Amino acid sequence: MERYSNGKWKAVVIGSYERADRAISLKKAISLMEFYQVPVAELFPDSPPPIQMSNLAIDLRRLSNEQSPFSFIVKKFTNAIANRRKDWNGQILSVRANDLQFLAMLLQQNENSVLEQLEKLGLVKT
Image (cartoon, rainbow, N blue to C red; front, side, top):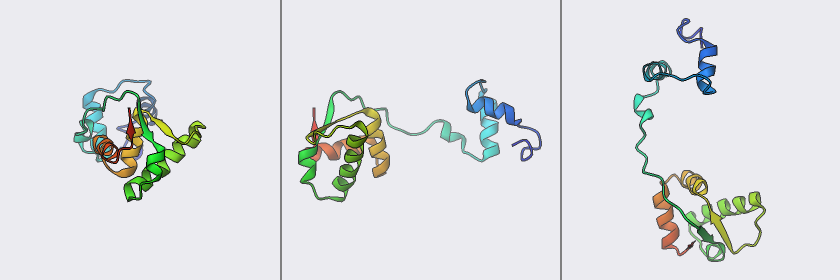
């Protein structure tokens, strides 16, 4: 880092920023972004507000009857979550906010779209 920036950025300082041991000013953050050639707009992403979730679950029995590309990915995802949580009841799977975020990334969609598709297929239990 020091070599590529001709000494402008010290490795120890960048490490402190990365570990959040040291605060970075907006001016320095912008300068660092310019150095890495990252658009400043990345500081302000156009993401929708987080979905407010309460007691959301996926009906795994109903999911097992679905045969679409969407449901195939959801099946793989829910199987992985169930295995990780050691939840083998196979009937419903509680969905946490970060589960929905990861599923949306996997499907390359936003969370609202995924939730709408799950509801449209009748897979959501509340």
